[in-house]
Image 1: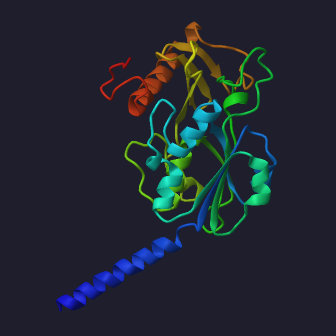
Image 2: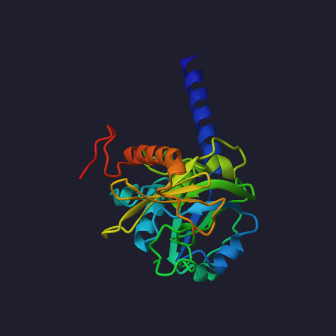
Length: 288
């Protein structure tokens, strides 16, 4: 009787392993463009789940790539073995990352392979044109809004998703789609339920960092249609409402009728800083 039970257990485990293997993509292809305009992005539009409100974790190129591959914001240090490609390969899933040269990916990689999970994003948006003097490393929508598309015909439902997302969410989402456990300290969120059509709790806000290593280092919080920009210590510097002012021409910071909104956004930003360890520890004490 004991042998029979053991045999049944082994058979069940083998079946579960087979189902898990079948639900995994044959490979993962991650294309990271320089900015939000690319022919590769256009080529992947059809048949993909597209996040229409996606942001970069940081508009600095190398910092953004690090955030994409680690699922952590740039201020955190991530060992190589905790990077997305290493974790996928350890699980037996080939992962190719093509950065900068997105156009050549169209000729070198099968963007629409039915058994592959293909993603494309960008490190930053286009250079701000409606704000003279602003650099690429700024918090304006033109600089921080990026494309984020995911395609895997076997699992992902083609759709346009009006959901706040960040490219720091890519690593945990890919790991979830591939059935690989998420690291406990990952900063990004698993958005896989949205691309598979299962739905879930919609993210209320996204966070961003920029000006790293400069005197004007900044942090950004977008909640709904409100955008707040803080200095590195958490003091509010700018406030915009993207619904009423999509071009960010009217700074609401300092207006008396915005005090409640500022308090709410500042509290959310502080909670985020505490959660991800951005110059604050979990108790709320500020780190130097």
